[in-house]
Amino acid sequence: MTVPGVDRHPMDTGAVTTGTRPRKAATARSWIERAAPSVVGGWLAARLALIVSFVLAEALAPHVTLPYGRAKLDEGLMAWDGQYYRAIAELGYAHADPDAVRFFPAYPLLGRWLSALMGHRTDIALLLIANLAALGAGFAVWRLVRDLGLPERTAGRAAVLMAIFPAASALGFAYAEPLFLLLFCIGAAAIVRGQPGRAVLPFVALGLLRPTGVLVAAPAFIAAVGAARSWKAGRVDAVGRVISWCSAVAAPLVGLGAYLLWLEETTGDGSAPLEWQRKFRNGFREPITRLFSAIGDIATGDFRQAYNIALALVLIVGTVLAVRRIAWAWIGYAAVGLAVALAANNIDSLGRYGLMLVPAWAVGYAETFRRRDVWAAICGLSTLGFVWYTTLVWLGQVVP
Image (cartoon, one colour):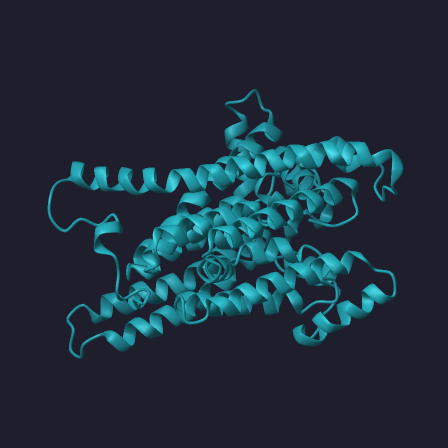
């Protein structure tokens, strides 16, 4: 097996050492065409599952307890965080709810700018951005997995599994996650190819999209250490490479810092997003004991924790299965992300947070379960989980 980030598939990276620009464009078209069946198929399957789950939620609504009434059903794909993003895009932080500052600005700003072309329909603009970014993220995941030295079958299966993961309804709602995944995979691919300078802008954007964007600094740092070990002593470009790698590591922190600094200058409270996140997480918990205590929560009647535990175990198992299959940088990213998600008393939305930790967990399943019948069963179970979980989201029974 190749060493990710060092050994590569030159014929399939899109980098052509000889030839002209049209040759490079043809190479890009080639991999996109090969990726399209899996990526587009998974994207369409997920949107069909969204429709089925909504119909099921409407059928169940008269017969179950609705904690929020019909609010989530009536809001449709703009439910939950989508309402915050729309309020920020339309009104700005000053006129939205006080806790809106915990939703970072890049996504709602894009929605505001695009809505000007759509009759100021911010909801349509936000949903268009999210769903197109989800499609782009599928191609970006496929490309990233190939750059990691894994076969096309694994890349296609990873893209499909990301699209139909039970918590992947966030990739169809008006959420920042699809754009986050797209930019993350673009930056990660640059890191894997040993081109950290090209990861800087995507990683800065991650810091402006979500607070957890700073976690990307971890795999960038691990990859930088690995790259430094392979450098030859006395290389004339050593200083430039150090600057490039340091820039990639610092980029998400710069994005986060820019938002907090702007808040400090405009509101006098630059720490507000972090304080609100701390409040919603309900304090710090050691992640391993938190996982076990969630099982106890189920015994006391908090059945919502059953879904969080199930999704956590799926992600943990997938990450473990990926060990020795991809570079430690991406195993470390998944491990750190899961630890942060579990290190709270409130672990709602854990599945959505874990979804962002590709490619490790998706590669783990795609590489381990290669038989077609077994893989078909996994995809079937995941799709059923998607439909049921999203149905509960619209009924207000779980927090996406």
